Length: 273
Image (cartoon, rainbow, N blue to C red; front, side, top):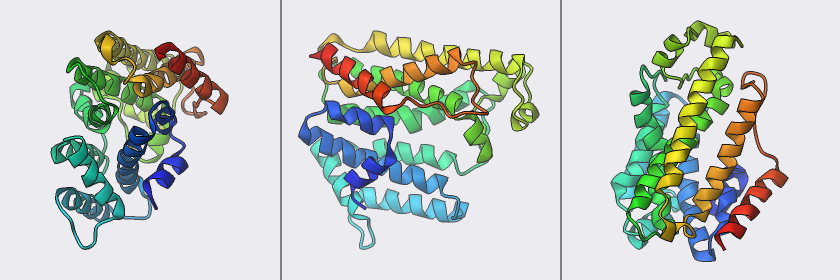
C-alpha cells in the first residue's frame, strides 16, 4: 500500500490538515504520516504477539538506517525525506520508541513519566513535521513540542474508554489518587463526581499546553504552520465539546463531523492568507 492510500484510509485529523500545504510539501508530509500510521498500526494489531510487534518495529529501525533486501517501499521514500530535509534517523526512532511503550503494561505513575510518552508519540511527530512545513525561527521547535503535548493529552482524554478495552491506562496514577478515583473505578467505567473532577483537571492541563503553544508560535512562521494550527483548532474544539458534554467518554466517541472540520480548515486558511 502506498503512502497516499494509507493516509487517505486513515481518516485522520492530521491528514485533513494537509490540504493547507503546497503540492510538494503535501506529498512529503503524506509519506511521513504514512510511516507514523504504519508503526502505530503495528503496536495496535490484535492478531500479533508482543514479540512479533517488536520484531516488526525492529525491521523499521533497520530500514531507516540503510537499504535492506526485505524493506518496505515506504522505507525508501522515507529515507529520501531524511536526505531532503536534513532529518536525522534518531528523530524518527524517537517515534518508534514511543510506539514500543504501548507494547508493555501501560501504566504511568506520574505525569512526568507520561510526558516522555507524549513527547515521543506526538511532540517528536511535530518536530519532524515542521521541518517539512518549513520554518525560519528556531522557536518553532518549542511550539511543536508544546502543541504535541496538547494534542496527545486531548487524545488521552477522548480515548479513555477505548484504551481501557486494550488494557491501557494513560491517566497518571498520581492523578487518580489525587481525585480519589481508583484504577478499579476506571476499569468498571464508573462515571462519578470524582471522575468529572479528574477529567476537568486533565482538560486544564491540555488547555495549558495549547496556550503555551499559541504563545510560542513565531509571527513570521504562522503561515508555514497553518497545517499545525488547523490541528490545534480541531483538537481545541474537540476538547471544548467533551467539557461541555461532561466527559462522557465511556459511552460515546467524540469526533467532529466533516462539515465542522471543513469549517476549521477554511477559517485557518482565510486567517493566514
